[in-house]
Length: 227
Image 1 (cartoon, rainbow, N blue to C red):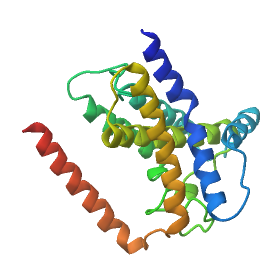
Image 2: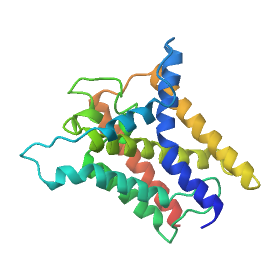
Image 3: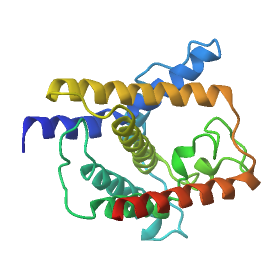
């Protein structure tokens, strides 16, 4: 395992909560507020990990396993992702299929929907009819909730890594590639904050249209890849 691979592994494990902090700080600046510290997500995770978990007598092992399995699936998907122009830690033919299935598994066991972000959901709302990101995890607390929040931030990091690679590519040389990758990730987080500060989420009746459109584009991309 090379030092560059270890660096990417460290980024995958350490950087995701910072993206959440950048998004929240960007939204606060646009709204004219000071906002929470950039490292607030780390503080929240540490606080939750120190707490205990309370389980209902009517729940089974599936309820307890959901947050752990979700985080494990997302972390495993991160090992398949190439960062900064370097090869991924685990790579083989058709690994993109496993990448998609791992993210699907994470959403299946915890029912989180696309990081609860615009245009599907609004992370600032607290109404049970609209907060897709909260309703499915209201019964979790302590370390379980920490795993869910950390997994969601890691999933956001993976999406940012993919977009950074597609938009910015990779520079010549290892150092230039890593700096360009990090710049792309940071720009991705700032962009999310700006978008969420300037638009509202889609009406619920429009969400199926968005999902169908995304599925069609994904199928078209797969056909082009297999040609």
